[in-house]
Image 1: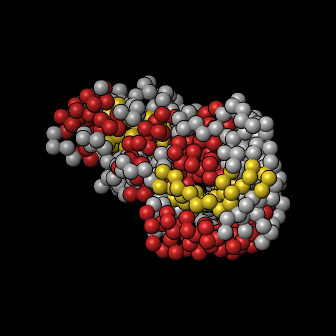
Image 2 (image 1 turned 60 degrees about the vertical axis):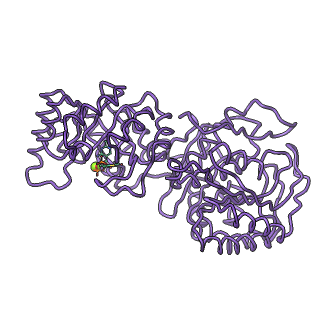
Length: 512
Ligand SMILES: Cc1ncc(COP(=O)(O)OP(=O)(O)O)c(N)n1
Ligand SMILES: Cc1nc(C(=O)O)sc1CCOP(=O)(O)O
Ligand SMILES: [Mg+2]
């Protein structure tokens, strides 16, 4: 992925207004792009006259001036993602929409639109007919739209007062043609002390819940959130990962920038570098937990109840973790001194229960940390050490039963969003994959790379983390350097010419 393999910075464009006060618009976007590792380019739509107290003038640029900026950028600095902010009138909306339509025929560049229409101060920033032009011409070209509550009402043409109404209005906007909507919750506090954003991606809704930070320096949070999302998309992150990292970036800016006074009014949100601390990342609300009621976020009929806190393994570092498909492999690897192992049978025969029971016996004999993949009921019945579940399994497995039986639980994750979501359950370990391409399983759309793995691992330095996917002896040192305490492998062990030598070398790398 871009984030790992290229030394060139991805290019992100901001098509937005200049804020002479330096807190929002183009100025906030450029600081954000730079902080998150992108080269920022700009096409200015308006030269606003602002300070921390007021919006004195908008000063829209003529569409010819806007077009010449866009064309110059297209000729030499083709974008990996585009953020759009203030469009001052319907003519500008038409111009940008027409330009994007042509650009996206060359390459489908992700577009994030922050529908800046009303400043936090209440100042109206666009001319009257802009909303119609946006809905008809621009939304169908957007991958993500990031309204705050006022802007959601402006576009949905309806008052929005509750979690349910936010979800309905977001779906309505998606119906107008954009791929996804992230409603920012800075203007509402649906649960005391919490500021939550709602993401609708056309299929599924998610609440990202952050702690409320009381800060006078909150000017530019909407611009910063949308440009941070665009930056993460430019880095190659999938939408949900981009949204949670962007929210964490804003949260960090609010937290660390809260005491730096600039001007006499609302000062700019801080731009304080890549979010490295878990406290800035949102909690992913899970259906079935009590607090979800405040957001009208109801459990699905098939969903299991929310359970947290699974038994901790005896070490944060689980070491070399081969994933194998037979009891014979377990026995062989146990004899070579491997302590963490998984039985992963993908084509079970009629003797599945017997195999799991035999595996458990081997596990007890060698004092293994032995995880059974998928078959959590049989794992409980056979008294296994632990089970490993994928994201989809979390909807159907009886987590209560697994916890009450005292089994350890490992959960697969693929990116920031899934990591944060799985962490809510406080499982025994969290697996992160696929780090590299692999022939063992089709993970093409979920490759993380070591740079992103390191950023995820930094959030949970004291937690048992396992890296998996395409890891071999050559790549293992770079994976171990990210701070994960365990490396899970299939083919690097099962297809090794000399299995004992491979085990020894992996152990040496991990112990170093
Ligand atoms: C350690 C570890 N990490 C991830 C996986 C993948 O599990 P899952 O997502 O359940 O997919 P399948 O293995 O069932 O194909 C794993 N098995 N082990
Ligand atoms: C089973 C599996 N799960 C993955 C995930 O990312 O969840 S990657 C993977 C395959 C790991 O095999 P190998 O070591 O041969 O690449
Ligand atoms: Mg599985």
